[in-house]
Image (cartoon, rainbow, N blue to C red; front, side, top):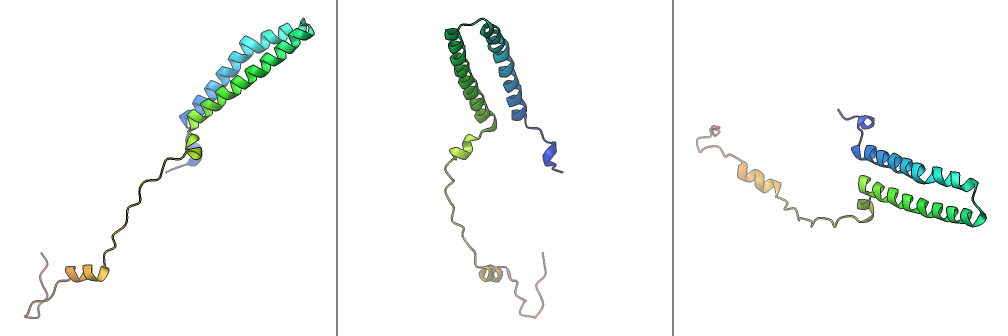
Length: 115
């Protein structure tokens, strides 16, 4: 029996794991040291920290977007595969087929025996 809410896709779990991992790495290696450096920074250094933060945000979003495309294969909605070549269906005349299968009675008038 299929229950739609009970199936967990491994790609969802993988995406969430990678998302949390990237978030922790960016926070641990950049955001915490940048916040500490911002306290004692002059205006030129503040501009540098702001611009590098924007660049890092763009890189992280592109990385997470590409992981999202790879995990969930949403590319199939934008670049679908070409459809398969159509096959023409041969329709059989039902009355002709029934006439081929019909068993005629013998000349005696008896119905034919089944094998």
